[in-house]
Amino acid sequence: MWVVAHPDDLEFSSAGTVKKFVNAGKKCILVQVTSGDRGTGDRSFTRETLMATREREEQEAVRRLGMSEVIFLHEGDGHVMPDISLREKIVRQIRIHRPDVVITHDPFRPYAMHPDHRGVGLATHDSVYPTARDHLYFPEHLEAGIEPHKTAEIWYFGAESPDIFIDITDTFDDKIDALRAHESQVGMRDDLVDRLRERSAEIAKDQPFELAEAYKSVRMNR
Ligand SMILES: [Zn+2]
View 1 (cartoon, rainbow, N blue to C red):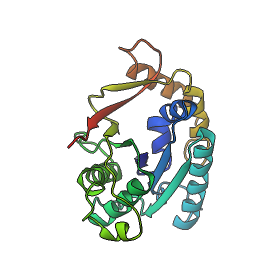
View 2 (cartoon, helix red, strand yellow):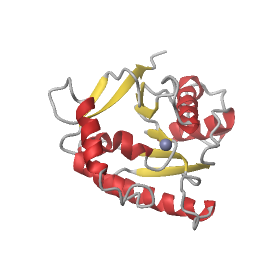
View 3 (cartoon, rainbow, N blue to C red):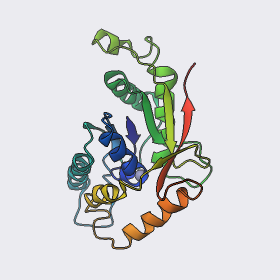
């Protein structure tokens, strides 16, 4: 289960990994915290029309990657707070979908960082441990038949010292295809492929393959 701040965060950080996992028969789910409803310089958009456009684009990207589902939490773009109310929404999805691994922004990366990325990373970390695991957090879930869930591992993307490198050489084109679904953001940029290929090769520089996405893994065996 991926939990990300904005439409296209999944695709930039992880689309090659998603496609690889989907091809291997794994179930991949996206929890989309904001709908990127302030992310434009185009004055013909309102927040409402931008939200509708970006959710449509995200649904198309998810379809291209073969993910099972996308859930929109509709937090305000740029207004994410890692508070107990956001945690309740993330915990609910973790308890419903019962992932083996939750993947999100690294909130512990130093200094320059989008506040929504930090907020979503932190809220997701706190949702996995201890909140989703212990039944006295949000007992209304249990009353609705949604059981607590213990996630084995968190993976962070955007980490300073990653320890998991996924070979995306064969799914790099799928990553580009998913990114191009975000027409309002990246669809028209023609240097996109070269820049991403360079970045993916840089991440893979010490690996026995050409292109990679990387994560910092944390085992949650408490
Ligand atoms: Zn973002």
